[in-house]
Amino acid sequence: MNKKKIAFGVSAFALAATMAGAGLAAADPSGPPQYRQLSGVGSDTTQDVMNGMAAAITVGGQKVIGSYDSTGSANITTKDPANGNCTMARPNGSGAGRSALLTSLQANNGCLDFARSSSLNLAAAAPGLTYVPFAVDGVTYAITPGSAIPRKLSLTDLKAIYHCDPNYVGQGPNYAMTVYLPQAGSGTRGFWESQMGITDADVVAGVYPCIKDKKGTTPVQEHDGRLLDDKSIVPFSIAQYQSQSSQTIADLRGRAILGTIDGTAPTVLNSGFGVKRDVYNVIPTSKVATAPWSTVFVGANSEICKQTSVINTYGFATSPNCGDITKQTP
Image (spheres, one colour):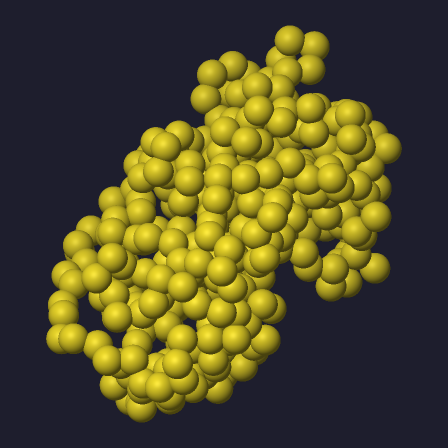
């Protein structure tokens, strides 16, 4: 892309006022048993593939994974109320999932057993956490078919856009380009920031004033293309896009199309894409050798790592590091 201001036509896109509540009902655990041995929350990116894992994996003939979506009802109940109070506000995103898991572990209440995460966060945690990779995702940018933003960009171009370079996004306060990030706590947000060479602290402080994480007053939910208009851009998981496209999961793409980065087009299996990441299940480090954590999550022969067809069905590539337990917080 030539380093010059992009010319945008005057276009308007009326986002439905009901956007925040327009999604389908959350696919929380259904069928027996109602409450599972391994209850988890967190990432929007991996919620659907983990729902698939929950349906496919049994131990002793029983489903053992209870994976709760990042959006849906305000509260969730993760364990049998007869054994204690495990009703909590629904965590939305990787960061919120990690925090909720730590809160449960610190309280020793048994309410949560793992968290889903689409980014790696090895900041100190008490008790310690282990990030167990299980699949590979690619992340690119999404725009609309009528956008003035090119469908092919270099990583250098994208970094300039997310640094609010006026030669790309125009002059504030009314920028020609609307540069979106997903909601606070999103793993995709954290990963994309790392790829763009920006920090979340600087984003929150307004160092990059063209970046928004809300449309109006509505937080930008990751992998929901319905917020896009012809002058906006947002990061998007390739796995999410492909599984929405195939109707494997609810289709929230709207008019979104995916862009090509450095000449590599986004594909169904993302192991060869330039901007890629492992995705993780986060478990207590103290449980890596304890069943059912050890049998379900840990090692190349774990129950999750055996489910390659589930991983591929939801648009992810298999990870050569599946089940690895070397990524632990201090």
